[in-house]
Length: 186
Image 1 (cartoon, rainbow, N blue to C red):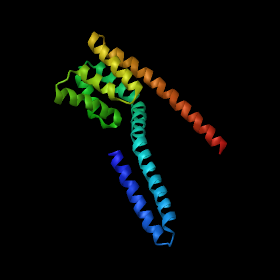
Image 2: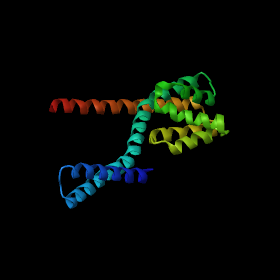
Image 3: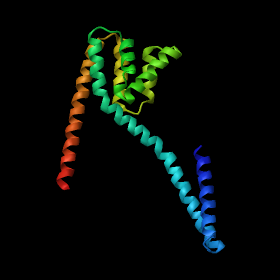
Image 4: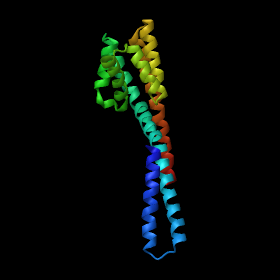
């Protein structure tokens, strides 16, 4: 699709600029060279857009997951403290849209279990392999280990929630200091 789009945009840019420049009485050779340059520039811009757009989307998802992870972990720890099974905890987070893209990632695991017949640990492992957020991946791998070893899930979730909240607070302080420095500059 990228190659087709680049070629198509090149041809459209070349033809449009050739028509426009021929109406202004420019010689054929100069018009041809300008049209080629114009087509190549639009082709390169299209290529760069196709190349960097997925990276930008992955970065946006990573930021969204990192921003919502401490609150989702806190919610999961509170639910686990009441003795709810892990599958129900995962389903509750997946159904909760207030956690943004984190809920979408968890929803992928729910679909793998519900529709494809995966076990919960294997579904979570599949999601962790495809996520763009390192912290979320680390949490899922620890969650799987806790499930498989039979350890207390509430203790693990409580520990991860407190760690994530500390990290979140430190990032907010760092961000606030940076904003303060920029405001002092201006």
